[in-house]
Length: 421
Ligand code: MEV
Image (cartoon, rainbow, N blue to C red; front, side, top):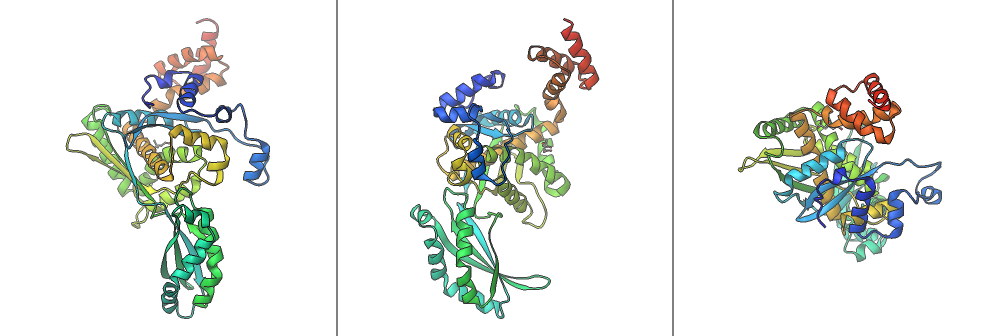
C-alpha cells in the first residue's frame, strides 16, 4: 500500500482512520482501541504501573510519504506537539522520489553493567573473570532459555577498571543479544543472578547490576537524499548544512537540534509502547561520546546538488515484551507500520528522526518555524474565543491572512463571523 496519499492531511480524521486501518487489516478490537471507542481498562492500566488513578490521551497521527528500504510505510506518531507530523510528512515527500530512507543496524546487543567494589587486586580479578567466561555466560543464559532458543542470549564479557575519586572499581559488562526484545528485563535478570558468582571469582562486593542505556552495540543508521528543489533551492540547503555545522560545534544549538530529532523519534517510540526515556538517554549520551555534545545527524550536499542527510544513534526498542505486547494501541501501531522485527522498527524510527531534523532545519533556514504553527495556533485561539466548528476555517483563514494571532483580534474576528460578517 502506497504511503503517498495525495491530500492525506486534508481528509477528515475518520477518512484517514479508515484508509489506514482497512489498508493494514487491523482487527475489530485494534480498531476500537485505536479510535478510543475502547479505552485502556482500569485493570490493564493497574497491571502496568502502580497507584493508578486514570490515563492521559495523547493523539496518534500518521506521517505519510515514508519509504524505508524500498517499502512504503505509514509512521504512527504519538505527540502533543503541533506541526511535528506535518513536518515529517513533508520532508519524507522530498526524499520519496530519491528512493526514500535506507537504514541499517549494528545489532540488537545490549550491555548489563555489574559494579564490583573492594577488590584487592582488580587486574588479577579481571583476568580471573575471563578465565570463568564460559561459566558466567552459561549461568546467564540459563536464566532466559526463550531468548537463547530465539538465537539470542549472553554472548561476551568486557571488563573495565575505573579509578574514581574514592574507589578503584571493576566494571563487568555482560554483552547480551536481546533480539526482538528491548532487553532491559532479560539483561537485568541475568546481571542480578550472576552477581554472587562474580563476587566469589573476584573476592569483591557487587553493588549495581543494571542495563546501560548507552546502547552502542545497537546503533541504527538511516540516510536519505532530499530534493534541493523541493526544499526551496540552493541557498536554503546551504543554510541547512551550515545549521548542522552550528549544532555540531555549539552544544546550546545541538540541544535544540537534537530535540527536534527526538520530536520524531520519541513520538514513534511512544506510539509503539517502547521506553521513550531509554531511547532519549541513549541518544543524548551517544551525542556526547566524543567528549563534546554534538549533532546526531550529518548534512552534506551530494554530487547532484541535492541534500544528503544521515543519522546514527542507539535504538533500544523491541516488538515483544512490556507495553509493546500488552498495550493494544502499541500492537495496532506495529501493525500499521507492517513491522516484523525490532531491527525494522529501529530503522523506521531513525528515518523519522532524520525526516524531522530535515524539516526543522529547512523551516529554520528559510521562513522560520512560527508560520508553520500559525494556523494551528489560530485554531486553538478561535476555539478559546467560542467559535463553533463550522466557523473555525473562516476565522483561521482571516487571522493567518492578517498575520495577526493576538487573542483580542481573533475574538473580534470570531464575533464578526458569528454576526455573519
Ligand atoms: C521544535 O520543537 C523543534 C525545533 O526547535 C528543532 C530545531 O531547532 O532544529 C524546530
